Length: 198
Image 1: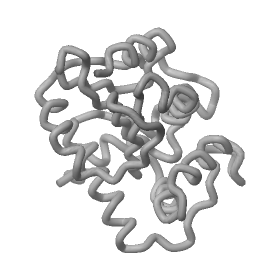
Image 2: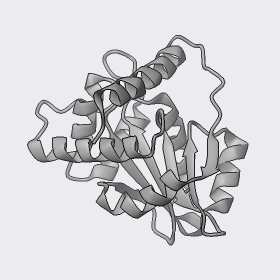
Image 3: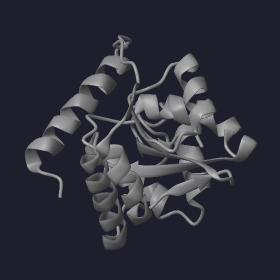
């Protein structure tokens, strides 16, 4: 269960990063890739997550994303053309940790008839909404109880990784180690990560 103080810290961290990016200052945030007990435990728990799958294949990359996260958007755009190639399956795990509209935008995606199409709409129109900020999908006017339960469960899984923000990636590498990557990878890091996914 996510504690109030941890959730507040996560929101503050994400808000600081997003706020900085929206005013044109992008902090030097580098992805941190490690094999650790949290990753081992969380990979075993990922069956409890509600995911949006992009591509088919045995090489699985789990990624926690918030509809309003600019770095998640960049990662989605980078991975989109690669999903399904070389056996890569990307499992997007929607969370709502950044802003109140993360809940309603996340709900719009999860309540859509085709969740992947809705996720693509959010990302392809990123920054093109009425405020010019955040995900581009129209927020849901109603968040169904089942959707709220999905977001809460996914949020709890993200919290259990002890990651300070999104995107957070979980996967098993070619040596069978459970890997946790926190933060936005640059192009070289992403290339290395994709090469290492088992």
